[in-house]
Image (cartoon, rainbow, N blue to C red; front, side, top):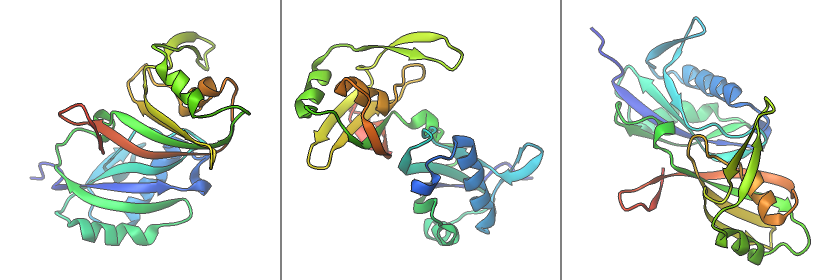
Length: 225
């Protein structure tokens, strides 16, 4: 009798410019189809009455963003070497998603979403005249930055937009703002919002990339996921 999946492969993808307008659900469907087409003996799951590969995914990336850290855990009926899994999935790369890595992890490890604690973003934009590293330092020196979050329902809620910002820096040579944000249910703030609060006005965003995901190690230090 089958007791459950025999192995779990963590796939890491780059979400490229042609995919940045995809929703999280559309991305999930695309990556599931890719896993099914790989030829790997996946552990089956039922979704919408259809049999699909059993998979788990990382935190949703915003529509309009690119990413270098889209994770998908694929559960298999067989033991598979990391290299073999990569060899099956990589030929399916296209202009939207490319495989960065594949690694085996224990079947019963916590989910990706439960384990991720922070995300780093790179924002290329036209910032207002006078915006500089000092503007970033001024924001970071504040104890709190109240911000009114308006939900689609029209309901508003006040959040502290300073609390989730773990680090930030600005490179004027390439007009690039880097921020690392703590991820915490009910308290998350989008990187665009942080950039707007730092600049005083909404920058003219050209490109936003989720660069990396992190978890807090035993010493409280951020570790690459």
